[in-house]
Length: 196
Image (cartoon, rainbow, N blue to C red; front, top):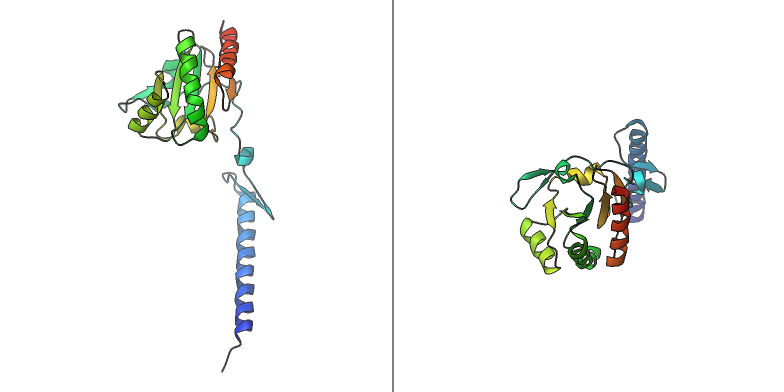
């Protein structure tokens, strides 16, 4: 018996389409009944909390208390950073906006580092890469690693670079994306006013 290839192809395509539709229906049903699911499937549209494209707004929140790693792998609590105004910058070496931004942070740190504490939080690189990359851009302020993503998860960070401006008591008063030196100076002035 000879099977016509066009009918076999059409039948195979029909089965594949029906399988995909059935799978989508199952996912949609599970998504609507499971509170732990982060994505929701709607025909033709997939959405994520916070659209999945922007950082959660943490202005007005307290800086989360989590452990970061220093260059030697020691756990350092973010609670130990409190007591003076903070500039907390999240970055990594292969992030093009970070490459552009870090020399400006180094410049402003040299000018204003006595009035505000700068903290660099690297989200991806090895200690060696983090230190080399930062040094090549003139950075001399404190650098820490978020090896397990504890701080990134706590503030629901999606995009890098991100900078938090934190009062001495831990209140986050501003959250920004890429900054140049003048914008950073302006944000620090606001931070210092809020911290007075």
